Image (cartoon, rainbow, N blue to C red; front, side, top):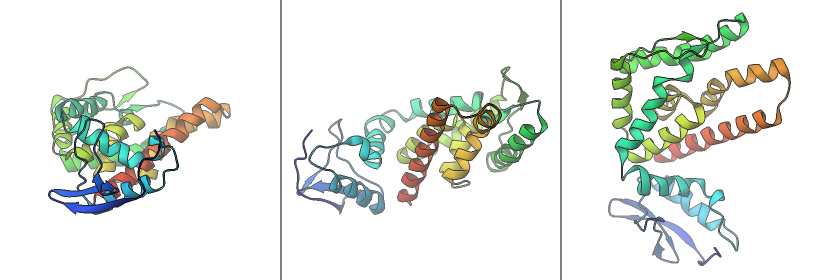
Length: 230
């Protein structure tokens, strides 16, 4: 689509903030009025619109795209997305530990144990650890507590949690990131311990490296999105 506007600006409206293109408010692909909860996010979206060239490139507008998804998908059916995110807790990355070698065991424990301890202290949810890849059934009470934590999020933060859980393969990492307990860098480091180990042992793998770069980029993008909500 060709650029069809000259200017983009953020402005206050009833219920929040919006971006206007030549004075006309932006609407989502679902034709909803795009209302932001914070002026910082609205200004960042306006900057994305302003930076567009002759042809619009939504891939270069991640904050706007996340906001579209929030209003057109997440806010329309939050329960579905709470279920999606909670499902990661049932087979959470942080619960599946290597039995050996000792160096990898120590790395996993060093990065993952503090997050599980935080989860227990913050939400009273104790997840069970397992060695290897054999599935372990998590306590219903723990899953229920995690579900309740995600259900309490507003639609914009639930969007962040949904993307983060998919990127990290972990509901715990996603929740800690949304709660501000960890940074995007820490989230990516925790999510990639096993991948880093494999590359160290077997050498570079172009496909694996691309996936890791994309994961880190996704988590950093979500961290930026969350910061703009404050």
